[in-house]
Image (tube, rainbow, N blue to C red; front, side):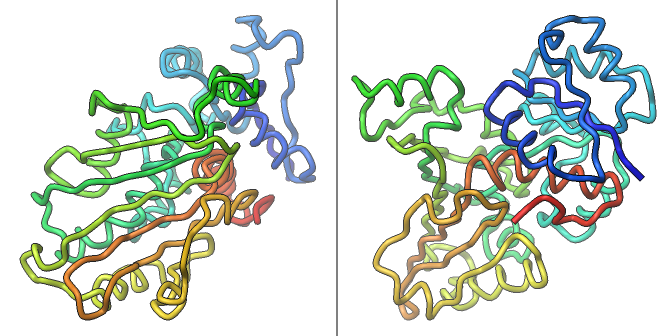
Length: 311
């Protein structure tokens, strides 16, 4: 059986990456509008005739597109931030919690996670669920991404070769749009303190959560924290936890280490006898952080092999 897919916003960075992952597959047929992609009626027809729609649009445009869909059989994946904390939508992080994969498979409306939140939630939610991090605990996350996550204007700035800095901290107002998503889907009660940055490289990211283990109520060891993550992702296809032996031997970690994949690797750095730890997620902001995640969710929603078209 061949499923029809319409990518609304296929000309953007995420849309292009999704199309590349889908167009060679024999089990899918893409609805392509070409020069008619800005034609409202052509879009409306595509939105209502496809088996599944992937929205790669700004928030307001995504809401408008959803409002245009009248066919109840159409399954929708939205890659914007418009619906990520909307209780009517299923959050598209299959490995996030037991049963999440099944909820995505049965959904008609799935909100694709943000790249930074994917790393943060991957690290923190299992620890909150296990009671290692109390829900009321203040939590900080530091992160750096390649410039491709910033959209066309930022890509043009960094690739122009003049004036772009090697590293830029941003989100300095502490009101980044990812904060509600990060807070809700980890089970935390306090808004996350999010400190994002962009580097002068195209793609790949590191998301880091520093923890004062001795300041947590249970004073967990590095081994306990690591064990909780290992248990949470046992058997996961695209999320892995580096062993403590591996992390102890590492002297550095490149944000580009998983580029081109839908994988995420979690690390627990720290002195086994000490009271501090650095939790670090490595992922491709255009892979598991965006396009790869959308394809993974699409596969689940259509009842296909979860890893089809992904590495």
